Length: 70
Image (cartoon, rainbow, N blue to C red; front, side, top):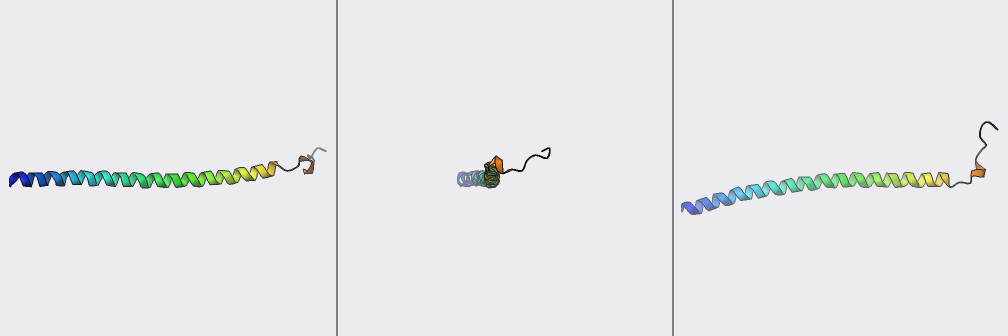
């Protein structure tokens, strides 16, 4: 019976380590998901800013008012 109890204790220890490893993976996945979401927002903001810059620079330069020294 002692060997059965020892095997059960060993399995409980292994299960505890597996639970810890799974929790660490879940935490890392959540952290990476948040970082990816932040990077996606940043990329979208940069795309919006780039599009507005393209629009402002695509205007006809002849429509701009003359510089102040004229």
